[in-house]
Length: 347
Image 1 (cartoon, rainbow, N blue to C red):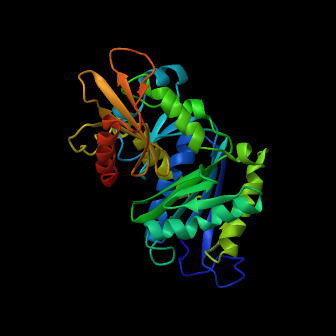
Image 2 (cartoon, rainbow, N blue to C red):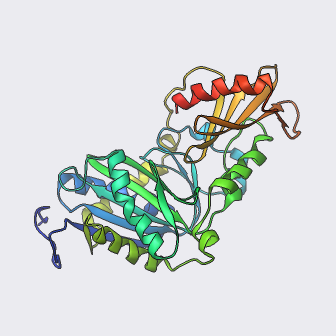
Image 3 (tube, one colour):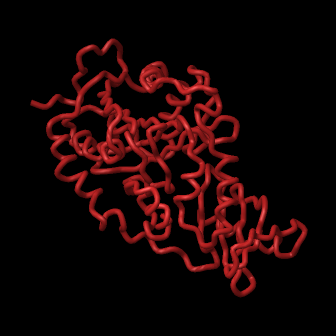
């Protein structure tokens, strides 16, 4: 017999909405990343309450955003060297490197008692991981729409989406940050772009350990996170377990779908024609934009902060030399500003 979503679970102590807490612990990457999809079907149907899942992947993998191209995003040489799985999310966002030094939280909820999805839910729910981090000595605050930052450096990435009639909000903390893997996994149009990318990642992406000098136990972070949702009067999460239907669905539907190369290599949404060759999101508004150069056989790399062009480089595609930096007072630099503004409108 399934429990009505209107019934309080045993142990409810106030008038807060009661959610189920599933702690998957340290588990293999497909379970850590995609079990949320199996739960979404149960939540959407009303068979179970809204659910908070926490997990930690047991090994490294690459997480690919739903709208991204496997062939365009992932460097094949990196996959040959590292032999890690690539898992396509059902949520949006960029390509990310995930490993056992990161801690996940995943919210699955319906309109009637959780929220309507979208940016307003990101702001509301991400107040809890921000509060939990600050109570543990990490000065994390929300940088809208979806990053938690310390100063101006990202320490937590988050994304929203919908699956099977339920809303999803998934994210996690960077306990440690492998900047090298983050830069090396991406396919780039020229080798000269990679050092620029690595510099930007090191500048804008941080970790719990780098900021606080220590790495707390995941159980400590989990407990403080659960308490933060309650203290902010968002919901009370009571320990529970996956249902047999959720486990069966994961084994027979979710996992096979994500292990199918056809799912991993879905054809992405067609890009608008134009000179923009590659857009690489580093963190928040910070990106590298690679354009076809004005001269034959050249590329221009724009280092941008939202619509603002901070630096620009020109690379010769026939050579592996370091790119030449464009002077800010040059005509080429000014012409590039227009391209950057156009790209920011299509972001």
